Length: 149
Image (cartoon, rainbow, N blue to C red; front, top):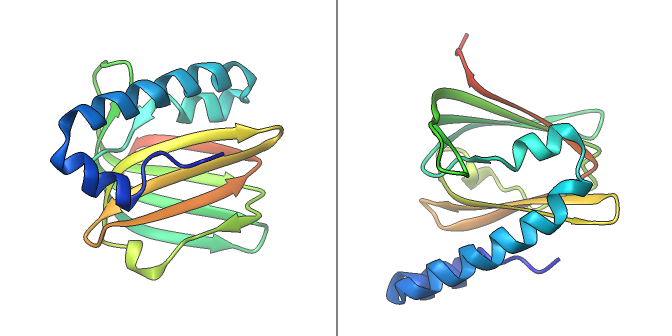
């Protein structure tokens, strides 16, 4: 499960717009092969793009659950309309993460969902500062456009 959207890739893609297109085409092909094998919840997560959403909060819960709170405009990957608001991604069975405190306040650029057997991975390239966070997990639930309390 090699990550496509990395800080190094982002720096190169800033100088070569065709790299953006080629990488997204590669990712779309990979995702279409993996999507039928995903649970309904994770398949639903794979339909969204959180580009330009701000990471507002991250909670690490006792039961190997990580919850991400994002604020902004969430788009459908197929080009459909999106939803403005608070978006919540709750990942269960998190075994490994590269989460860092700097990600709170950062802006989500690109997400990448991959699978190897029953092990899933969500990676997200963030900016301000440009960093990569990733989570290996077993299941997830996404709620888009949730109203802030």
